[in-house]
Image 1 (cartoon, rainbow, N blue to C red):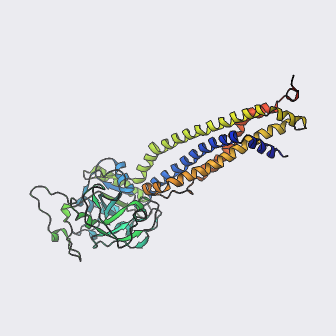
Image 2: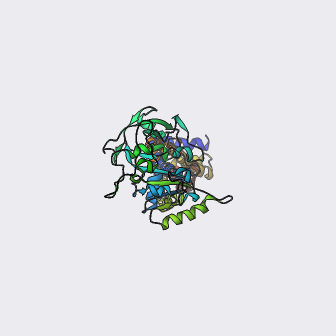
Image 3: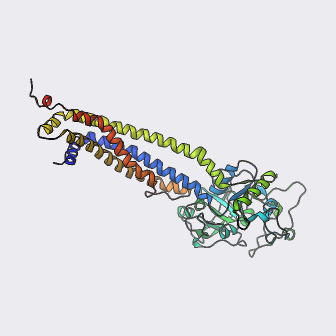
Length: 444
């Protein structure tokens, strides 16, 4: 019989003990795998917001991180609103009613307003205009694609576009109607919007958004900005607004506010856009009207300060679990070596070398480590797959049984083998030094 066969026979003879040892190791490995994969998914979720076609967000004075989390990831609450007049400072003359370039128009390539505060069945409702999907990108530099329908038109006041995850979770299709609620899921029900487009999956927070025409958003109860005492709404001709084909009259400009402005900064020929962004950011932050935040910088700071330390802490805890499992291998192998000392003596008497005895014990430990490690690896992926739908819904990234952290996982099983060999060295050496004469002596 080969050394491998002898080691396998020893495991089968002590099936319960060996099984429990492998199980404890498998549970530890499953926790490690689930932690590694989930950590990678969390990083992917945050980093997915760094390439959506804009490199700056402008909003009310306050926490820049809160501004980014709310505007990019649709979590947290808006700080405050900024005025419509401030938003127009980023528009060129062709997009302004007065035909004059805004103060920051020369530094701006694209300015997209967003208005937030409503919900639809747990999903954030974002009021914006057609520029959002026409000129921004889906996160990898490519334009947005529609799985069904198309982008809403600016004159279609009650048109809406759904993210892929929203449409899949709620079972909505192009042509269906939906009515957002004000401030919370149990808030006052607004007028219905009609689904005109459903986005293809982007694996970004966009998948979790409900996007509606900003003009229809403004016409909902409670969305008009209260005017100071004595001031009247601007007349439509002065505001440059006109009713659409359905007869809906837009909200006057002096009653409008926006939650944030998504900016793609302009760049000078031969120079990176970051240079223009730095000057624009400084100019905005020195003013009174709002603040500018760089999404990539804020998210990197969040990852470095909170996410990565938490991930490291979880890894340390799971590493301790694996270490305890390795100690279990040690205890199991010590117990088995004491039980089969006579078997070892017989092997030696039949011609087995000391090295063969040593190798048999080490092979047995390696088999337990590989078996428990592979079982734990599969269990870890099953665990991620089980919570995958929840992660996809709440983080906006795909998480399934096939999600992986390739490099870390590739090193895991070899690490376990080395750990098992180290744990088995003591019982292996004990078996190596077994006194043949002592154990082959008869009673008395």
